[in-house]
Image (cartoon, rainbow, N blue to C red; front, side, top):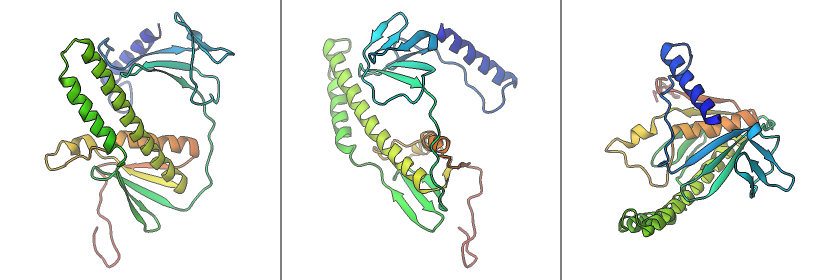
Length: 261
């Protein structure tokens, strides 16, 4: 039933966007899920799940499920999404209300320029400039991933060995994604804690990578959308102002001595 409601809301937003009734950016056509998708998920609202005293999770039409909790819930969840990753593991993602925890005010502001050869270039209002390098600890994991991909390509399609090799590749992909995501979150949280205002340039990283002369770093995994989402969480929870410099903003500025930058 929840999937039907989500589909109805998606189509309504799409048609309202096409006819001009919905303000903001254009909403794309809804994409239906497929059984062939590697990542499967479904969402339940409050009447479809409950938390038991013994720490188990009750799901409608499934029953009680044993959960290994990563953290305590800050409030009663309003919904839960059950996700099956390509490596075969299941995750429960809860929607809860988190109280804001504002940080003490500081006088420094920072501008972040997300790049490809390096993760980002940070320029602060006190004249400092720091280049944040891409994480190098992903090298061994990426080499293992390439080896597993070659191993999977030698297996016959549809065989059991092919499925075993596919799961090994999925597990390696998940480890690389987690290590990269952890590094990005730590860098973003450090910027939120040490600066009062954060300015981020809105770049089309995917378009820059398509340029023949630009060689993307295999460790980067950067995107302008992910960067904005991580800083946006810090803005909402820690009361830090966050601005986006669009690509149409003039970049030239005056330097001491009358020079142009």
